[in-house]
Amino acid sequence: MERVIIIGSGPAGISAALYAARGNLEPLVIHNGFGGLEKAEKIENYYGLEAPLSGKELHERGIRQAKELGVRFLEAQVLGMGGFDTFKVHTTAGTLEAESVILATGSSRKTPKIPGVKELEGRGVSYCAICDAFFYRGKNVAVLGNSDFALHEAEELANVTENVTIYTDGKEPEFSKDHSLTVNTMKIQSIEGEDKVSGIKLKSDVSVQGTDSSPEVLVPADGVFVAIGTAGSTEIARQMGAELTEKGNVKVDEEMQTTIPGLFAAGDCTGGLLQVAKAVYEGAQAGISAGKYVRQRNK
Image (cartoon, rainbow, N blue to C red; front, side, top):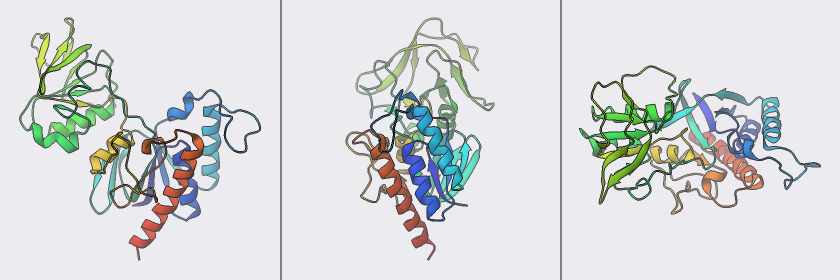
């Protein structure tokens, strides 16, 4: 079992890893590429830079620095998280167990620009299958997405209902394993419903895998679960039952601990100033706090 797992390898994640490593916690960083830092063409407002660096260059320097301290890295997609006394992190490389977890994947929650999604949030549109699957027992549910994250959410829902369809909204499925779920690859026009979700309106040339029936323009649905891209810090926090702020950020205290003991968060996912300097500070605090938590737990 790991002492500390850090999800994300941006400035917050690497900073957390450095401090956790210095605290002799042998942290494991799980990441899935560069993340938001890669989009930064030039960074010049950060301490110690004689000349501007690209986000990719700064990220690579951070990785090398962490590896010099013995930090281990696992390149995999995080699908979700659970657990009670300890944390179980489900990834495309398998399930890992940890005494504490630091969320540092940035503010990556993706809401598709599909009419009806925003309007029907909380009234049939959800972002967490583990949280809300119970309310859709035996009902027609849809999962929006085309990655392993969407497949994982759909499999969670399949435990409570047989009527689960993954809608990729015109994108090719990118699932890393075989499955028996129905996949609809056509573009979505809108999510329909007045007081609550009632269906999904599709374009007429719909293509469906796993069914012989002719597609309809309006497909009935009682619930729509959004799982675009990969599971970010917000989605993982929701799965664990951690509180969010009114703005949808992960709620933390001065120690960067969420409302779940042993679960910490740092960087853009906590809101506030979206800058490297702030992410590095919060990551450092989260790494120190996770160390305190693990040592106290093992007394």
